[in-house]
Length: 486
Image (cartoon, rainbow, N blue to C red; front, side, top):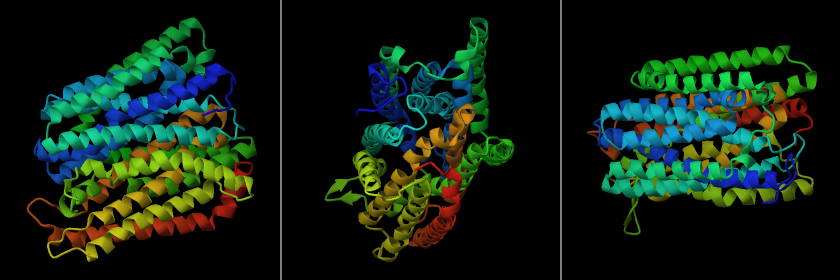
């Protein structure tokens, strides 16, 4: 993985390599909670499916929504490197608290974990994007490699989570989740100098201001934990708050775009806003995986495959395998096609991703229609759905991160990276609402719940395909706004 970097030397290359491996282990703990929280809440703590879906929606909202604040906090108060390590420490403590298996421990553990994971993901993306000049054509390839590393972490996390889930050994599961976070901390400390921030507002303050900002940043971390804990216990109110906050942030960014100069940067910011709306549709469907789609898999899919009992978390490894192997192949394929004159750009990838994930939803009603008399759906249909969803993710997610360095003015890069991730947080709340409209499995049977699932999946699939068509119609406009981006 030879990558051209801003500082051009061995230090820059070591930084990108270190971030690749850090990404693998930093993702492991999140993968465990992401894939297990709904099942743990319903099977061990006695939550209803509606309560578990609402909590999972808020979990995703905070995890992704705090990315907005993470970009600001890392760039101006603690440094991206410091905030990342502190966030990982909070995640280790949170997983240890969760291993106690109590309802009160659930909220405190999640509060600690979410404070860490919500703030530090922007940091790792900013540390990576700073190692490239804006015109560096290899930025997208680096993010695809990094995205593959993240999904390798998901594979390890999902595999371990499924193993412990089959035994319902949740204490060991949450202790296992701390392992990856601890390894990420160790790698960060070993590569401390190579991960230093390159160009952030914090680097331009004097020593006295630096100490004050560091202290303020630490106080913010301390205060955030009880606030998040309180909001987790009021999931419905918090979900509404996140939706309103997302709308306000979008409007503020739109107003900023209207006032911004020069015109070339303004046009690119406008393209960013349009693409963000398309991404909101994609992520709403994608975030169903740990919620309604997970419960559908648990109750309505035949999970005995070739005589092996498949854990629900293992089904999500279809996604990770497609990403891990498909990410580098896609990077090479796109490079070859562009060299031959194909115009594969951001608008086309976004529209294509919406078609793919829409088809991923539409195949499920087909599987339900072909289900046996007991209503159990053949495993191949959920597998096909996840393959299509994974292809959609490959088309939109890595290029979504990479485009921030291309479309965002330097002064807004951290904030716009956070806003981009906040889209996923808002989508998580929306996915929680969609999951709440799906049939209740408790006390029912697959034959009775299948019609309700089929109706929801059909609506979601058609909506995504329609949004993809709209982006295709807007493609000439988006290309004019983006201009030099290819």
